[in-house]
Image 1 (cartoon, one colour):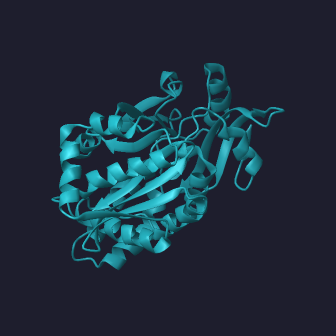
Image 2 (cartoon, one colour):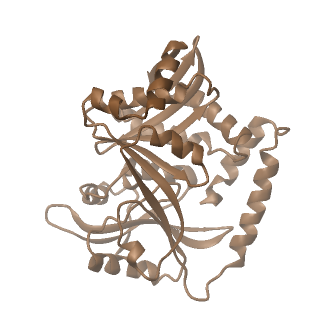
Length: 344
């Protein structure tokens, strides 16, 4: 059955137990996304049993905007695996989505069932890295590549200090760096700050959001936003204004130590596009596991919507001009707030 699950805590509790559940299928993350962008989250769900647990679920958003109608499972998420353990349940729960006659997009890390469905085509992939942080600290340290240990020591010798915070104003310090890097280095629009405010509202009250700031002489040079969910620490957002002093290596190390102090088992390094070899090399210095995130798509026969390519071309052009160095930063940020939802 297809159900809107906004504001229905019993539905979220029904899927929370599933072994494939992650940050990106959690209530806290999902509600921050939908509050920011005005989406509605639904689920194709198989009956809730007497113990309150569902047999399976596919979370999705039915979007309708300039790019037409489409189904996106886990918008603005690194991945969002269907919470399904067998092929029969997969076919049962995906059937009502396919019957809508709309394109469907999935990003899967751990669930292999969608990739084996001949109706879905792999359109892209990304790298994923994780670190086993359940090991003793010395074992973790010894498992890093030598360059990581050298960079951490260099940052410490150079006077880089790490400060942990859960305060909204420090999240804004991160955001200013984030906007600068996206604009100046990648020529991309930033997410609106209200998204980070919503994440703060969802996670900080449970001490599940930490901003680690790397500072030199009291001035921030880099920051990472970590989110905690289900025994895993997620390295979700990072921005750096300084690379010579290796603050990002030290941020990873201090993040691991915080995760250990909270009894967490894994650090999820998130998705890395395959055309970012430098980022992949950085994560490999620390990682104990590397896998692939597959972006899968179903497209109904005869559905091609010319609006999609036309809108994507226009968005690309707008992004190019709105991230030009001559454009004031507040204008670029305002454009991100107005346009970001359409990039999904």
